[in-house]
Image (tube, rainbow, N blue to C red):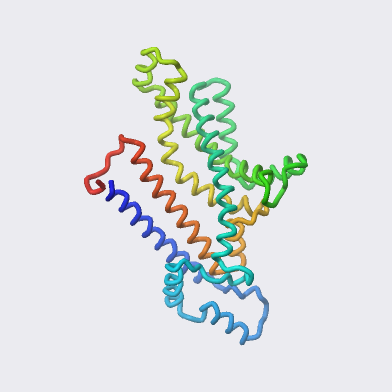
Amino acid sequence: MAKFIGKRIAMGFATLFIIITVTFFLMHAVPGNPFAKEGKMPETVYNNLQAKYGLDKPKSEQYVIYLKNLLKGDFGESMKSNAETVNEMIKRGAPVSAKLGGQAFILSMFFGVVLGAAAALYQNKAPDYFMMIIALIGISVPSFVMASLFIQFIAKGSGFLPTSGWGTFAHTILPTIALSLMPMASTARLMRSSMLEVLGQDYIKTAQSKGLKKLKVIMNHAIRNAILPVVSQMGTTLSNLLVGSFVIEKIFGIAGLGTFFVTSISNRDYTLIMGTTVFYAVVLVAILVIVDILYVVIDPRIKLTKGDK
């Protein structure tokens, strides 16, 4: 088990190194530079800016300097914001994105499991058809379309749900729902198919033949086993929520990491692009490694190879 955990962690570091390297060189390979939109400026000023951020050095040297600073936890200065460093921007935006993503994750997991299980229990009946139609809409309609519809038809008409901004719980309601609908629909469909498979197993029939109450059979045997595929999908779901929050944050005017990331790309702010990319990559890789380990721990049917033990 210790070797298995060690291998997963080592693979996580290798993945991070590849992401950092590829992102760094691809970003610098795109024509132009962060100061191209500044208009025509004196050559001396331009050269000073290039020297200040080390852009006048060879790419390989810039890369080595970036890695050394990264090991110290220093993401550098933003090339467009004089008020904050990249570390300060991440420190300010990360809690906002984490709160939005966390709420959306809890909402999508809870209702996805409940709706999927209910659809399986009422297979080919009205509740099943209704829930699957809702799930199909959730998968088919992109989150940014949902967000726009919510603003136009709910926020503007309600009078108490804000159309944009961040601060109170009311500000989080519509962005959270818009972000959670697609993963909720996917989870519901997965839970339904897994639940149907479990309900047909012999041990379920055995439990029923023993006279156990239906609710007890469902909770202790059916849902407990049917939820395992959903657990294995949690890492992917959470990563999709984090990536999907880029657009949602931008639409609702939320000052989270997603907004910083989108703005940094349009501004060609190299240090902020790298900072947000590395931060997201660390979070996503950590989640996937934890889910891999958790899945082995909670599902005894998964056998580790000799090299993993």
